[in-house]
Image (cartoon, rainbow, N blue to C red; front, side, top):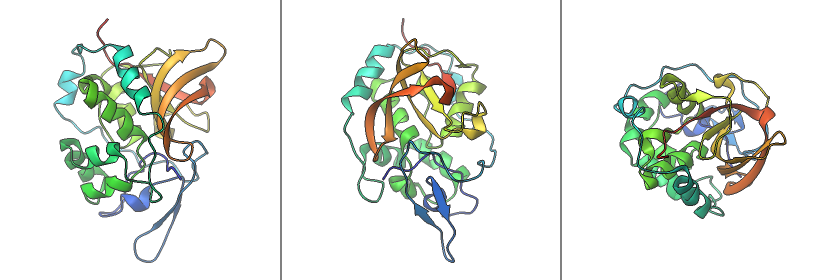
Length: 228
């Protein structure tokens, strides 16, 4: 079953224990009760953290030579990719766990980079698509949905209008607070009826899927500066 956003770990070595829709305390480490990625999360608000300052910020306002359609084509080609029974095994998690970014974010999330291998991967999917297309400086890269959204907001690329290729952040409670974000994907189109069509990773039973979502569940949109 898919697990939700990456929740910031409070102690070292607890990335995996802090994941998912439900976190159950245990004497030694903590265990995750997995749940569908498109069901409400049963944990309290994630602790606030500052955006990790990297060279990505400097690149965020530079237009990339990649179109929104190219990004969506790569995302669409991943539809059907599924996690294993442990919630891992995807190329998105494997890529992120060995990336430079994982070495940065693990200082924030606790644990070790290898723990991203079985972590909730919706944000890793978005990041991987950015990497594969050459749009990563605009799409951003993170394993934690809240920090991924904060990166867009910090770079003044955040708003409330759905656009093809935008990175869309969801809160199942309907909250408009970035701290309440549960999930992330790509906008394919605005359907004009209060819904958007999307491509998302770590949804359903832990797969990449095309979905239709109500805009009432959208916290906001990150806007990559794509080639026109």
